[in-house]
Length: 196
Image 1 (cartoon, rainbow, N blue to C red):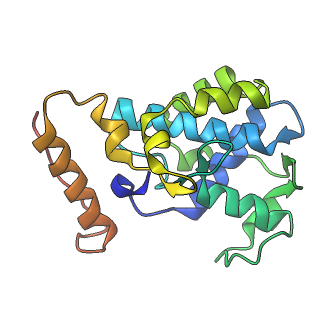
Image 2 (image 1 turned 30 degrees about the vertical axis):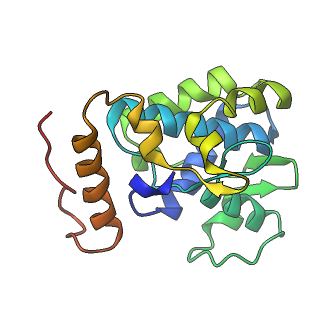
């Protein structure tokens, strides 16, 4: 999903994890948490034209995985030496191979109203579903099916189902976000302005 993604914000990713975990039965199942993030991010992209925190998604056998969020969970569980530039992750969550729980409350100031709505919707709709049901639902995305085994999921395919007959507009948005991700735009300025 990263072709259109903004720069990955690991602190925000951690607090998205904490928010989703706080909305699910305790301790939360790691698979359910990660799928809730996938569905919330897709909804946010479709409704608001941007991702929640700039996640990259891959397509392993069991469905889309938010790579950065999964790295945080693995790091907190002691299964990864991923270089987090803040110790907050180890202080914020408890994790194992299958479960994750929050030690602290999420910082809601990091999340916009639209992000909270999408995350809450996903937690309510998908948070208690079985592994099999989540796997089936998460495999329905055309972008997931086209990614290939363990391939990166292409965000343009997710957007294309909402932006009908405007291929040039979709390419313009994708190029603007790519410029932003490459560091060629000013950090605190809008990525671009579009009129459709």
